[in-house]
Image (cartoon, rainbow, N blue to C red; front, side, top):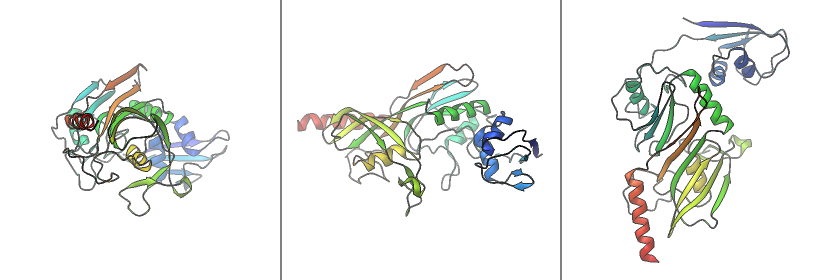
Length: 312
């Protein structure tokens, strides 16, 4: 059954999405923005699809929440490496090869299918095809990923990501030897203008979104380097695009890499979400987890260390 909210603006306010988020605190702002984009909001009896419209005293606003669509995904018994779990959150160490959510070419066998088996009552927060997913990892990127179990947790963690208080740290092996020990990469990222399956550095005026990555050398291994990355923003393929942009692509990256073989059998890019720190949505205590790197990354580092020792 469709739910409808009728609101009368009492004083000049701000953007439509902010006004609705303040008036309807049980609905996350991201969901409100989705409802606006989908044409489910009317301002003075006219459909409004712009979240940036300013509302004024006397405006009549109707928000219609469509009936929830049944989740057509199948629960699948896929093993999960659980790092932390309670009634609000679940933090996993994702293996390489596991797609986070269904997409063309990957209708099943995803993390979402596994979650539905582990948490049968997981709500369709974040979109019916992505229950509980607030941030994602690429198919072949391993490591820590947080899953939310309630709408409160979804809203809280999303706010942490937007405010940049959640801390996401990665380990990556790159080609080459950076000239400095640390640095900051600040290039906007958007869809590649020719290949829509790829991301690229794209000027903001052409649709790119601000993207900032901090990095620090952990270990120099001849013509390879182990880097510690920290995300300030979370754009799709951010570390992979930024690393390639500065001339040090991630080893094994099939999309943005150099194409050179490192002589070690890797499932994909040598990139691991190593540490995740976030605030619990209810207790507000800080939770920090460290995800053990996969054996393939450990083996790669051992091989590179031996080579570096021999060449020196």
